[in-house]
Amino acid sequence: MFKCKECDSTEFQLVVHPDYQGMVEVSCNEFNEVLVTANNQEFIADLMFMNQFAVCSNCGAIKSWEYFFRNPLVTM
Image (cartoon, rainbow, N blue to C red; front, side):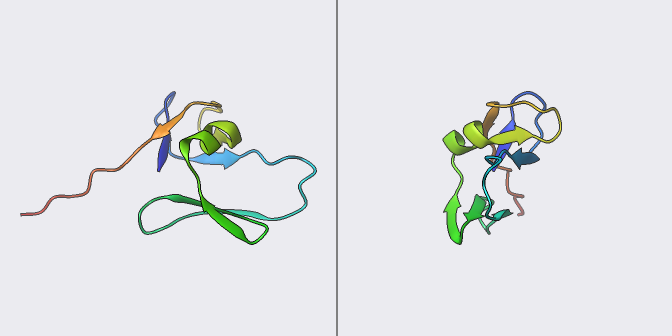
């Protein structure tokens, strides 16, 4: 998962080339990795991809992403 360094939001929008005609879908897998599907090809987004193509939905920041891993609940 990723979070915005400016506002700590994890919500984002991908910026797709205006001439792109295909569908782009974004989802998360069981490991909270961001999966991107475009033209029936699926890949896991990395930090470089996010900083090139993602805009923060909350504050509009670009190139402001960092890795973010939620702490799992520890039960005893």
